[in-house]
Image (tube, rainbow, N blue to C red; front, side):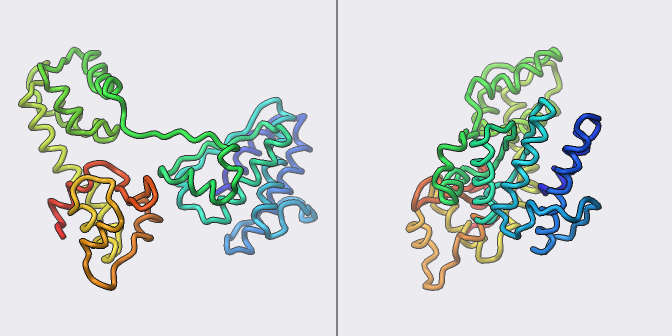
Length: 300
């Protein structure tokens, strides 16, 4: 993934005539990184200087550090910066997280204009700190959850008002409460309310009908797909969690619900992004309303 992203970045830099020699050196370093990656099972081929020695040690921490420093220096020479956008970082292996932290630490030490914006589940901060103790000082962690009540109202009301449509009485409040202010659910609820309404005013009855339709849409697509990602043992664990009511769910209570001596583990659910640990000894589903879906369609 990083090789592909860096290739595109260097292609952009190569359009600057004054940087062409500098970019060729960076491409050689990238080739070394790609070669080391291919030895770890990734098939990559770059036709550049075969004599480059940087970023081909086979140690991902050292190689990524070499690569990031090289890219940071190219960006500095170009008078600009480089940003890598990474998603699902909580799924990265431990060595990958260690390498990412170590490489960015060296970039920071040299004040190079390279940064990473990463997204993942809430326990990502803990994973990064476990990987490198200095991660809590190196990174700024921002929690992105449900919208505020005001932002949720604006998300539905402002676009509607721009097209001459208003919400009557408590219709907007009902949609916001039903969605638990989760951005994607607001989209689904708003979409159904828009389709149901026959006038330029979305009524309370429209909102209630929209919630029923949105639940059907989410149940048959979004929630079902997430549930089926779990293994048979993982699904049983999710059933036990959901049977407890509203989360977060104490792990000991989930175990008590399962009852049997040979109990499934939540490990696969954690790595698959279906649940996370908001605090030690507790589990929670990664999206709201999922427990309701499990209770409705897959009770324990």
